[in-house]
Length: 158
Image (cartoon, rainbow, N blue to C red; front, side, top):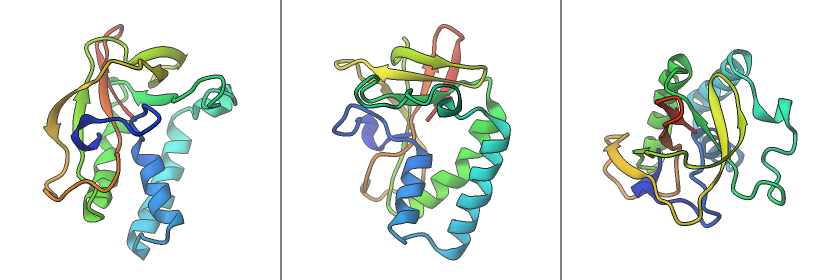
């Protein structure tokens, strides 16, 4: 999910984890939102592989500039939990849209059963397909991206 479907200045579609962590570090989350962040981050850590635990350099800006993770459609339980993150982002004025890509959204540098990590194409843009929040306000920053991994015919969320 990203505002307007546009990447950030590094060509990435920042994910909901990074955005929520940024709000947390800035002290902008309520106590309930912070508890949601902590408990749900722990759930994700217990239920899917963190790509950096397999390849510590996967997000290294020199080796893989702009690397972004995408959940696959087959990771339904992981994707379903994104709704709570999107609600928090919406409450902070971060409006999101769902994106799809008909081709791999970049060069795949990591893949497991639930996700891929790609270095994005410089000129390719994903297509916005639906609003993700009912906020309606202007976006403050980029949010998580949802895309299709055509090799597996599955959708992915970052």
